[in-house]
Amino acid sequence: MPGMTSEKQSRLLASSCLLFAGEETVETVLVQLIKTGIGRITIVGDSLTICRMSDVSASNSNPDTVVDFRKLNGHDLEDALFKGIDLVIEGLLDWQTKLRLSDLCMRLKLPLVHSGSSGLRFQLFTMLPGKSACLRCALPASGIDDFPITPVERDTFSPVATCAGSIIALEAVKLLAGIGVQQGNVLWKVDGLRGDVETVRGLDPRNDCPDCGRAAIK
Image 1 (tube, rainbow, N blue to C red):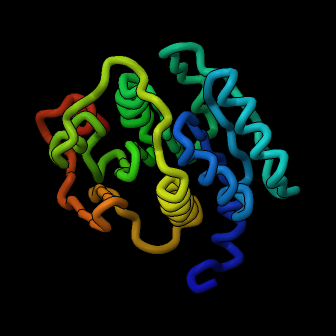
Image 2 (cartoon, rainbow, N blue to C red):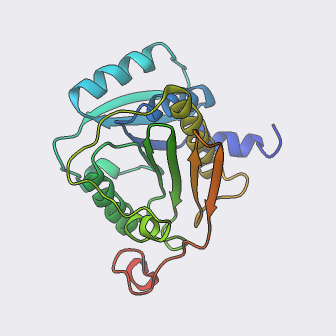
């Protein structure tokens, strides 16, 4: 594959990814990351989500990939969970936890791939500390400023979830292997009903933000 040298493949096999599950999108992400050969994938979610993702993992096993599971208790996010992690991917249904996860990844200088979906629409954003805005700044700047107080329902249309999950997996591989262009300050909005794709650019760190401001993460 163009750009994938043996050295970059080794980086991919040695990498570790933290996957916060909830949306159906994340099931496609898991399958694609296992097939690609990410070294270790830790799936975080509630009991029902872990059970579902365990079935997905078992039916798509790869001897090069270790998959383990951690239960997320409410809004608890402990620093120890992120030790040795190279990339965080989230498809959470709880928007308050999404924002707290953004804050934590920015503080720990960990790349975060965000996804949010509703019906036939979804958005994707790769947050690179020092190079891009945090979720709290990027989403309102993209016209997304409705953050539900309570968790939302799983209502994504399966073809849309599969499409979004594949793009997320591609971004993850690019980041972990160090290939291609990293979309650090770009948010994609995809409307499956209308067939529109909107690219929101220029989502750089805001100097007045305590989370993504460059002074905050030096």
